[in-house]
Image 1 (cartoon, helix red, strand yellow):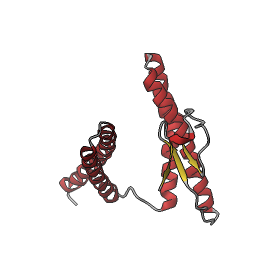
Image 2: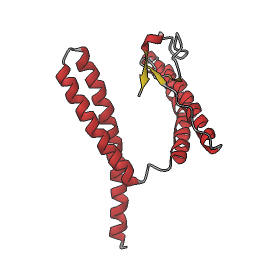
Image 3: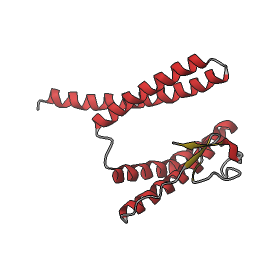
Length: 175
């Protein structure tokens, strides 16, 4: 392959990574916009935002697949543990320190709860890895997520979220 061809592949891979990040961000931004439209009683606008969010997800999945980002389930779990561990051990503590130093309490709260939940996620992913490595089937159980902080629990949600204190009613079941 010529240098130009190699450079083209490198640039295409870089573009795929950038496009993936952009599509992912658009998806979540549109979901947030849909929530706001629902709160404003604008159901059709909310539907439009959710439809566009789904399309952005398809784009992101296509980019990830082409980049070779999706591996075996065991490899994907290991990647997830690594990412979550980086977030709760390094990234969020640094972000939290900065927010506290700047006196930005809303950002500090957001970073703090996310940090605590990322540790929970790493634990859940690690538990799944151990079960798979031992040849065990994972027990079918429901997961519930706190709509305030994102805390993720197996089985029934607690009466009060241990991360943010939200009541059990603020948890929703993930399909």
